[in-house]
Length: 135
Image (tube, rainbow, N blue to C red):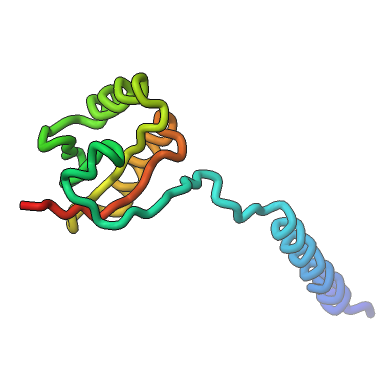
């Protein structure tokens, strides 16, 4: 008599070798097609601390007090208003630069968002600075 249970058990064994081969092929494929470049990079220069008298010579100082709360020349503005003001300054001086200063409680993402928003207008004329008032 033939034992059918033994034949079925032998037929149900699955070899893991082809599965491991496929996993390694997928691993190599994804390693080759993945790019680790930063697509949204912004070139920045770093300024030394400046006082109020240097601001007009250096460029426009944009202070980020908190997310959504911006100030230029002690005047509260929205980001769109600040961009319009900078656009007008660029008409008279093509090399006008933007100096950005943040308060201590401003999240880094807010700074990155502002720099990304201003990059289209200012190009590489964006700098981070530590603002020190002469008062």
